[in-house]
Image 1: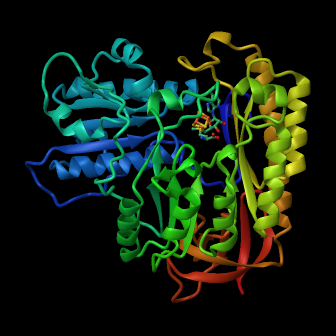
Image 2: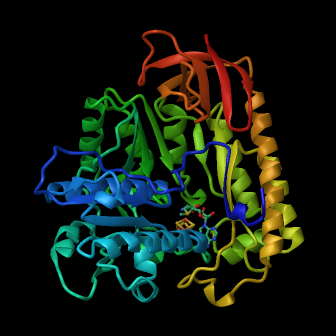
Image 3: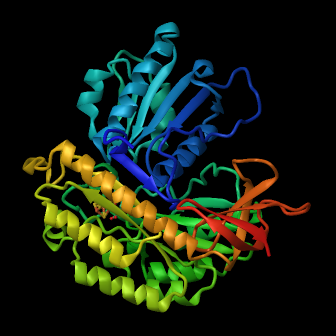
Length: 465
Ligand code: SAM
Ligand code: SF4
């Protein structure tokens, strides 16, 4: 992989969203009068979940889905601001979509989410044709914003500490797994990260709303829920902490598996570890972002833990939860990262032995605490470090997966495998993709036992046991 292609990398199959835009609105009954909306999503799983809420808000207001921008009355992009690369992609896409607006000037074009919140001035300058600019706490007001007409765009970027959208049931995508937002925002303010500035402060959705929503999902045949939040294990609503929430959700009949992402290492309390260890429905998979294996860089990043504390946590979760799979996030080339710091990261990754990792080149973000310090590591060095890290992780993922050969696992069937040919795909409890030949009568939502025959870094080839 070239250094430029390796700007952001998904290594092995962890619980993340597609990086490409995806359409999430489900078609409703045809109506010639109803305005048609096309929605594209960029970024993390939180954004995909937000798009499901946006979709619900617009359907309630009478909009129906358009399958393509060319047939839409309204085109919306729900965006990500985490790295410059993500923003550049959206700007390129906006330029493409401007052509639709040139041919049909009555089409409304809107930009939503983190990039809208982060970049209002640049957007109004670079994309003067935008009709709507709405931040992550403004989705409830989208119908009024779209109804407004005028030369200037309708802009709503109010961050609202009370907005949780708890009363709006998202238009969940069909499937055996549903992603449910448990908390919004972030209070951690890591030096490199724009999230607290674009998504606002931490707030948790009341357990009663989550229970109602997940019961409805179970009644629709959903078997697995993934609880979402930027620091999901910081969840707290009155007396209910995240460990207690996991235990409550486990009481819902029909829900067989519970996962969550992303937890923050400093919020991995005994209560959360206890829920993972004692509640069989909570799956043995933990995404535990590390960012760097150097204490100096961790301190500069203001992550709130040292290498020793992180390793102690890994030891405690591994002791408590047998067969736990671990994945992580790493940033290479943060300001001040020397070769020795980078080597400390590779050494720590080897020591932990992650099943998967998401690895990124540091991208300086305006508004963050590290912004004024700028960049000290060249793009070339970042690229080289990233390539080395990816190669090491690929090897490690493959070796950890190969260690599963000849073992048996329960797999929740998701449907036909992409490779076709009668093969089915699903996940093991450790969130590894298992591919196996189906049998008549086995369908999505079933749990079957498979034996692993062979493995790559990305999947397990299995047979029904
Ligand atoms: N809240 C989670 C945590 O604390 O680890 C992560 C959420 S963040 C949206 C996802 C990942 O993006 C981070 O873990 C980090 O590795 C990466 N990231 C965030 N800001 C970045 C930046 N400025 N440059 C490169 N990667 C970044
Ligand atoms: Fe960003 Fe840090 Fe919050 Fe994660 S915990 S979203 S990296 S500020």
